Structure formats: structure tokens, C-alpha cells
Image (cartoon, rainbow, N blue to C red):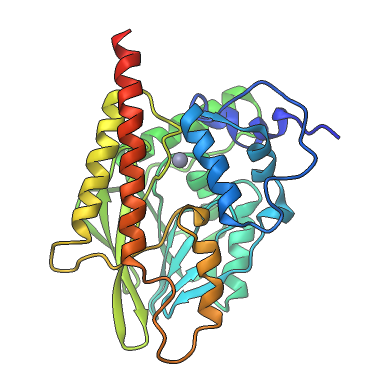
Length: 330
Ligand SMILES: [Zn+2]
């Protein structure tokens, strides 16, 4: 059966063109990229997407497959839950006075997100603030659905540039008529180094342009028994939406800034709670939370792994910068 590139463009391509532009339709491979959500094959597909700027058809099919995307939600820290899907994360940071959600998923997966929150014993209506990393469909596509499902006072926040890019991506999806997704009206505008609160959850925002110019990253506390760790969510990881050398330069500067946040400041970063679980082996590491014995280190506290990931992102961007500079010169 062919579910050619049309399906993937239905889900993502048209709404994010040119960032998620399609390659020419090719015969569907016999097997999906993965049926068990393992990191390595997804990371390979993600890297290919970043290098070419074109979504591999098998990745597009994978993104729209509800059965393959579903993963069990889980408690990552005492106050942090993973409520996302295989491809893209949604993190719920909780407090007795209300919760903060990072990212909104897309299409039918936003309803999955709401179901995941209930499955871990929490009420989506206790979400006070939704912060969105950037304006691409897989992170911002669920904002309208959430706004309809959550109480009227729930706040939604992005950077100024993030709002702009989300409006544009939504507009393009409507203009194309394929899988149109609606945006909400502009709400909170995040500033660099600003701390915003939802309930008793404090989220520190960093503007980290690069993946897109509007990308924001977030720092917050993750509780593990009597220990409090400083967690960080890098808002954009891929080079799939690069439009010139200036954007790659911004990406590199943001990565260097994040690296410095792991080394200096009053609350250095301890760990990475990623926007894409395959990007740092979260998918595999999470299984070790359940089997963790008393006294063992928390499986997601891996500062060396985070720095290694940042080094890899920077090295990839430096290679890309050479290409983009050559393109611009020609
Ligand atoms: Zn993106």
C-alpha cells in the first residue's frame, strides 16, 4: 500500500513549508522507521531531515501513525511528567497550586496529551500556563485545541518571534488547505531571562534563536526526593529550518550560551529534558526510572550527556555554517 509523501505533507509538510518541504514521492518501504520508538533509527531520520531540509517520506508516515506514536506517560521527577508522544515531548511541571505545560503536540496527539495527563492522575484543568518552544506545527499545533479544552484563564506564552512564526505556519497550512491548523490570539510574550509562573511553578525563559528565530528554551526545578535539580529544555534541536548563515550563527551562539549555563551562574543546569525524546536517548533512559533502586542516581540526571549533546549540536552547526556561507557567496 502506498501512503506516499501526501500523508506526511498532510501532517506537517505544507504547514511548515519550506522548513518541512517534501521530497519527491517514492515507493513506501516495507517497514516503518521503528515500531518500538527506539532512539537510533529516529535520530538517523531526524539528522537526515536536518541535513537535507526535506522530510524523508518514511519519517512523514511515522509522524502521522497514532499507534506508533503512542507511549506511556510517566513521572520523570516528583514534580515533572512526560505526557508527550514518541516523536515530540510535552512536559508537565506540577505544583499544588497548578501546573505548567511545555509544548502542545499536534493534530490528534493533543487529545492524547490530555488523556496522558489524566492517566498519570492529574487534571488538565489545573494547567495555569502553557509555554511553547517555537512556532512549528509539532510544538505549537495543539494550542487552539488546548485553549478550547482548558479554563478561560489559562495563559499561553511564546517569544514575540515565536508568535509570529506560529501565525505564519498556521496561515500557510490554512492557505494550502491540507491539514489546516488554527492559532490562538497572541497572549503572553516571553522576554529573555524572564521568569514566568503558573501555580507555584517558576519557568525561566531564554531566547535561543537558531532552530527558528523565535525559539525559546526553559529552565525549571525538578524535584527528586530531598534533592532539587535544575532542569533545562532546549527549545529547538534540528537544522531542518535553516534559511541562511545568520541563522546558523545564531544557533551556534545559543548552544554556547546554553553550555555556559551548565557551568556558571547561581543555579547551573544539571540535566536536559529534551523536546525530542530520541535526541538524547531519553526514550531508553526513562525505562531505568522504573527499575531504579533506593540510593541509585536518577537516570535522567546526566550532565555529561547533556554537554556531549551540546557539543554534537555545535559541531553539526559549524559544518552547516560552511555550507550556508558557500551558498550565500555563490
Ligand atoms: Zn521545529
